[in-house]
Image (tube, rainbow, N blue to C red):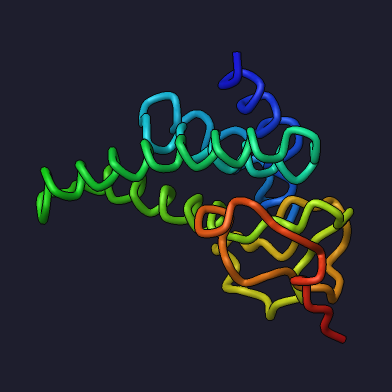
Length: 171
């Protein structure tokens, strides 16, 4: 049932936190999930990102969701690395697109979570990317881009935040 909870969360909430550009939301909600139905490492990466989103939304179960997210991402990474090792320079365009999408999801997964006592977490506004590149300026937050920035380590490297004192505020 956890996978269904994570998939539901991704398709109803998480996808809106991956970019502030609402024109790209349907890509994350529909196309990425559809690709995940045929590519196990994409689906596991989607579920891993969703798990970290839930960890940021449910502080009482934070450790559980972070641990599950890490396990899902480890499985996804092993599968993606197996494709690269097996196919090598014979990777076709569909496999290449899947691996690229996996790398984007991995970037989202690698963003730090806020400390448990924080209610919102956003990065400083970034310059606009090229039109085709989805951007993420507010990881796992529905708040508009603001100035506080969180710790620089990823949840995989530091799954248990010890205090909110580690958060640095920038103007």
